[in-house]
Image (cartoon, rainbow, N blue to C red; front, side, top):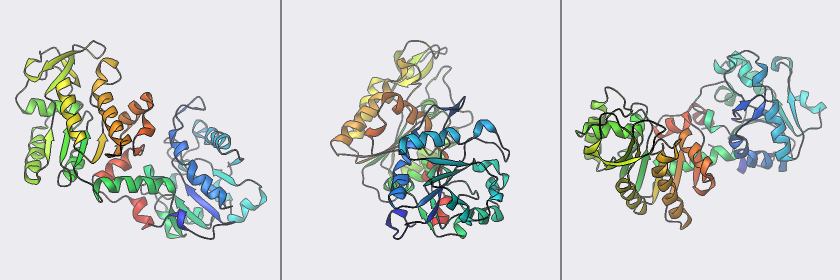
Amino acid sequence: MKSILNEKNLKSKKILLRLDLNVPLENGKISDTTRIDKILPTLNFLIQQKTKIIILSHVGRPKGKTVKELSLKPIGEDLRKKLNTSVKLITENIYEIKNKDFFEKFDEEIFMLENIRFYEEEEKNDQKFAKHLASLGDVYVNDAFSCSHRAHASIQQISKYLPSFSGLQLDLEVTALNKIIIEITKPITCIIGGSKISTKIDIIKNLIPKFDNIIIVGGMANNFIEYFGNNIGKSIKEKNCYQIVEEIISLSKKNGCKIIYPDDVLVSKNLNGSSKNKELDQILPDEMILDIGPKTINKIIDIINNSKTILWNGPAGYFENPNFANGSIEIAKKIIENNESKKIFSVVGGGDTVSLLNSLKFTDKFNFVSTAGGAFLEYLEGKKLPGITALN
């Protein structure tokens, strides 16, 4: 994979830059600009190189139809303010733009083609569509790691027709994830949560041979608590997972990886209630587990203190109610403390975990925070991502 950062002679080149600008829009206003902010270094680098930038991106799921509410216009306006340069939204039908000379009649450095998913050919990975897109530029750059698990025309197919490079953000993402699954500094620990163990089973199975500790928290920990003979009341759990838990325990024993689940928990009779600390054998039929307890927090803190690398995916409890956010907050604080003293390399990913860190304004205190969602999880599962494979 070649990085655009190392490429010479970019001056005056037209760069087709694939970004993930799929930000949440409410009445035409952006409610979270994280994905925009992350790609500013790549845009600034290309501006310094005196290139013409043609952005390819999408918002939402228009399914091959033009949907006015899913226009990239508000994103272009946000970029204009942040980069202090004009950004021109090209609303012409892409097929009516015959070649890259089209962009010569404008003074702008940055162009945005309208939502690439307004064309059904994009998600079909259509060869002719990709070839036409390629005819609009001299060089292709993928800086959309979070879309790179999709075999779409502007992600995979286009790289067949142009010199193709990775962008700065994609480089950071791959480097950070490789430190978790390839170039590992041990001891290495994974803290993994979420409500469904079946959605994380492939990640856990892929990580067990490489990791020293896997700490199970959140809703999926309830399956482990129940497996070991405890009543979990009316707690959330995934059905028919006895064999999955058994498989994880068996695999971990074979590979010398410790599986840790809660020793004590915080419970309530409903999601909006106050919390009570309980031992695992004290949970009543009308109670639900909503966070880890103080003994478990101390155990996790000890493991973090004895780790050199940490992967965190999934909060420890129902953090939306502050009464059940303490486990996640204490985990975050301990990782941050060890980060600041350079004792640890930390990677965090997953929508809920990132939301929690955003709300606490902790996002910039970790080595790397991934907003990539599906691509992040598939990379951890050991799958080959079409967008990354295309660049190789």
